[in-house]
Length: 401
Image 1 (spheres, rainbow, N blue to C red):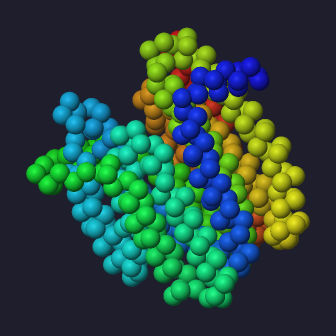
Image 2 (spheres, rainbow, N blue to C red; image 1 turned 60 degrees about the vertical axis):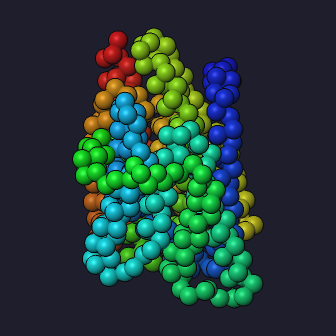
Image 3 (cartoon, rainbow, N blue to C red; image 1 turned 120 degrees about the vertical axis):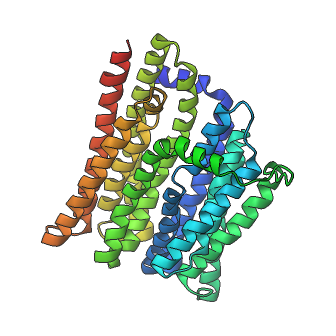
């Protein structure tokens, strides 16, 4: 096992700096999670995190536009102009933002700048500027930490927690754009709004983006229901979720690299099978390592810092579910390379529906509190990962042979 892991790290040496920068960016997010609740209090922290996740959820309203652009870019012999893509994306965002504002009767300008950052991130990825592409979220977290310090020093919010979150998104976008502006060109001579390209972006990007949209919904369901029915527990849940999601994000960083390696072995079945098998073993090791080391850390942090009754249980439940889910990204890209993505989003759709139904059942019949919802949700998340593992081993690798 250790030899497999060592060989894997050696073969991925050229991606070391990308993974390191990505992990460091998530440590910044961890710092924000560690100090935020202590400074503003659990209730306010829960409100801030809820608004953050609501804005992040808006990515689904791109309907794969950004993914479709990258697919179109690589398929087209004449490379698509990024300026025209940004113009199409900007009009798309304005249209759906307008509809959202009318329906919700709210004006969340954070959504506009966040979705623009997603479009720009896609352009940077195409230009192989991966370290710059992931900058938006750590910049946001740094500004949020500064906001927490302002709150601590001056004992008050600027306007309201919800408005302030939107303001932080706006400031994060400004700084993000300052870093990346020279890689985002605006060629006015070639600037055009092509409805034909707009349709092609959706055609190419909708289905590949379906799984990630379901993941966003899946991760938001619990938060939404807790906010509506167990509002006093929203802050505790937010801390537990953020600690757990760091494990998921670190794993998905590795998954980003393994996606490239799997793509390189597509036409060599024996090597592909060997690689995917090793990645599966690596995922098992990662899950064991994270859970083993996290248990004493969670207990220590709560005993000496948060001092929240029952926090350890909530944190471990979330950690197990999110770690399984993250570790699965080590090898699941083979599903998309083999055009079997219906397995992934089909199972994920069923799991999302089951979680939603189970959560409403628990709430309606008063079977348990929000911890019971966490048990059900994360247990089904683990089951999803086991099923995906089975699909890869039995339905793709074996069938391909």
